[in-house]
Length: 296
Image (cartoon, rainbow, N blue to C red):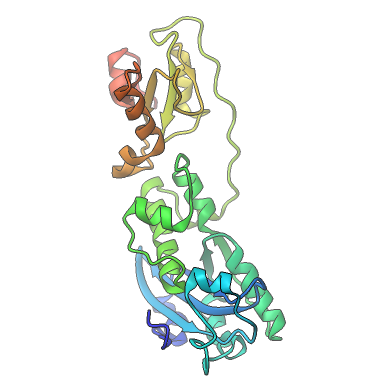
C-alpha cells in the first residue's frame, strides 16, 4: 500500500448485496498510540466460498497523537493521515461491511479497538459475530510454536506484509480458509465453543507396542488413535522428547502437505539424526505392521 493514498475497493453496496454476500469478513486495524481507540488504518476483506470477493482499506486521522513505538511497527505517521477521514466519517462504511456478519480478527485486539473508537467518536456499536483466527489456528495447527500472523503466513505459504491492515486482514482470512480445508470443520464448527481435551489413556500392561513412548502428530491425546496406541501397550506422551520412541502421523493430518514442517516432525528428525531410535511412522503403516484392525 502507498501510505500517501487510501484505497477503497468493493463499496458497501457490494457487501450488502445478498447475491454476493460474504461467508465472513476479516478486519484488521493499526493504531497511532497506546490508546486502542486511535485507529489510523483499517483493512477489511470479504470471503465467499474460499475466495476473496471484496476489499476495503483506508488511512484514518485518529484525532490523537502518534507514538514513536507504534510508528516503528507500522510506519504510519501524522503526515500520512493529514486530510484523511476520521473514524466518525468511515463508521457507516465499516458498519455496512461488518454488521450482521461473521467478522474474523486475529486476536480480539481489533474488536476492542473498534468498540473503543465507536465510543470515542460517539458512533453506535457495530453488531457482528466475532471469530478469533488465533483460536482457530491453535486448534488447526496445535504444535506450531507460535500462532502469530507472520508465522502462520510463512507456514501456510500466504503472501503477507506484516502490520499493513489490508494485508493482515487478507492473511487472517486465508488462515480461516486453510483451517477449514485441513480440518473439514466449517464456520459454524469454528464458532462453537472449543471442546475440552481429556487426558491420555493408560497403556495396556501387555501388547505389541509395550514400552513404546508415542507422540501423535495431527490428533489429540484422548482420541481414537491414542486409545488404539494405548491398547497396544504404548504410553501416549504430549510432545516429542529425548525419550520418545515413536512419532505417529495421524490419518487426520490437519497439517495436510505441510505436516513435515511441523515442530514435532522437525524435532523427531533432529533427534533421529543425532542417533535417537525414534521412528516416524504413518498411522496406517503402524496399524498394518502390528496387525491390529483399523479404527472405524
